[in-house]
Image (cartoon, rainbow, N blue to C red; front, side, top):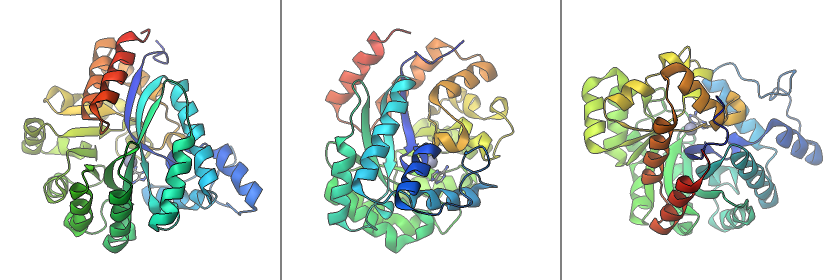
Amino acid sequence: MSWKSFPKVELHLHLEGAAPPAFIRGLAAEKKIDLTGVFDEHGHYAYRDFDHFLKVYEAATEALKTPEDFKRLTQAVLEELAEHNVVYAETFVSPDFCGGGDVGAWREYLAAMEEAHVEGVTLKGIITCIRHFGPEQAKTAAICAAETKGDFIRGFGIAGAELVGQGRDYAWSFDCAREAGLRLTAHAGEWGAPDTIRATWKDLGVERLGHGVRAAEDPKLVDDLAEAGVVLEVCPGSNVALGIYPDVSKHPIARLRDAGVKVTVSTDDPPFFHATMTKEFENLERAFQWGAEDFDALNRTALDAAFCDDDTKARVAKQLDEAPK
Ligand code: ADE
Ligand code: ZN
């Protein structure tokens, strides 16, 4: 069946990674920016592997220059969320791609993003530093985060090449964000082995992990994550597209859930992976026979783990309760 009209909550969505290819091509044409190598002959994003994906991702962001560009991007992303009945989403935003980490410039980009609006969809932001840009640049992202915490910016995290450096290299940035009252998440266990997941979790003191799926290789870590209530932002379609698992039926999300780990489902960078939240649900139904009760539980786990305030949670919970299913 189609799960399109079923309400959804998504916690792991990179704003630039959600940019439709045609949108990026349009901006590049307006600004006469050469994006050779970014798209294949069908107009889709073209990449060979994860490292190349990161390069193509960063090349595509070259077309996003001004706060107005980010307002248009945010509007396009909200419309796509509405199309799939995502009623609440959290999106990763990076000062590195918006004014190069300058707090004054960042405020202008942020104000522009906040102007985008689609009725019925609530969007909150998590500032991410980019791991392969190094710990010093991460500090500027953390300072931007601490300075702009508010109704929209709720959290801080880290994305990028997970196998670069050690989690603890970024501890200053996470401490800075925590002291500012931000909630914390980190990409770990997409590429990294269980020992690095544990190290990132403990060294950065995060309450959620981006992906975290390789934890399934270590039963003790699975138990510890379950016991501590750490929430995994699982992106099955992304993991399959990047070759971590051959198909969704081999993905560990069901095993993790059945072992008591709090799992949620997201799309990560939807157009890069030909993903939508509807397709994620459809693939999970096909692979594991998950149905309305399972998807409702995923939504509730995600909303519980969301970084928004309690009033927003109550409003979104009501939307989930009242949505036609
Ligand atoms: N940035 C955008 N998508 C990412 C992913 N899947 N892993 C790490 N960093 C990312
Ligand atoms: Zn991600």
